[in-house]
Image (cartoon, rainbow, N blue to C red; front, top):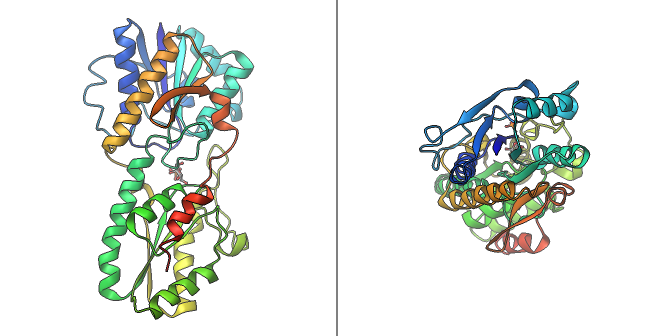
Length: 343
Ligand code: F6P
């Protein structure tokens, strides 16, 4: 078989570990592996490269993706879908492993449903917002990085008697904020799924300070809407049509509000893309490796339209469509764990 592999959407730690696992298992079966450059754009433009043992050497700990990524959506490019199908057949490909989040896998789902496209999926995203899998790879690394930052902010917050606002990624879900907030001992966590208002947050901080604590750590998810969404700022959209949430500056505006309403000196740290960069944690390396092996197995068995997924501790496969129909938001019971330590 000739197996294509592509990485789409925002990069995340562990992409290279998946590519390595797909390639290693495919090589043992005598298959060829071809890297598609920069996500779906590579199939639209016919940019592919053969991956051999040399190319996959040393990939396990390496961040980013050696084959590049993009947010190109062939359904939004004139003649894009036809170009994808044409490249695929001209290059003699038999299968594609699409490693991506909601958008990249959404395209895979549609191509499979509408054209019988032989594709299998691997769930990637630091946001952990894909349904049908307990965890996506990349998430653990992002949480680790945010937790480390919160730990560091604690010592400086304490020294200066300040409120520290930490803005983290996560798009429209608060997974990164909740997990790193719990791990880092945040005094307040604000996420899109929970209607904790700025007013409530300020009151909680004031109560905490009245009890003798001179500093507070507030973690806010980039998708949190200050005061119910009346604050919506104009922002650019990416190629998949998503608003660039980082440009709304939620962290900075929240810090300003807290300082004005409480009188406590407040600073903001926006963690941004460091959450996605660098080497994956051991947990992400292992998860990415297991996903890659599963994807290679699905390809070998011609079980297309499926996605590797984690259920409990087991790697299983689910329908691609299941993963992309709805966002996996943070359930109330997870938020309750965090809330127990507010104030
Ligand atoms: O989906 C991953 C993610 O890092 C989100 O958390 C964030 O909103 C977005 O991508 C940022 O996208 P970009 O890299 O285009 O700025």
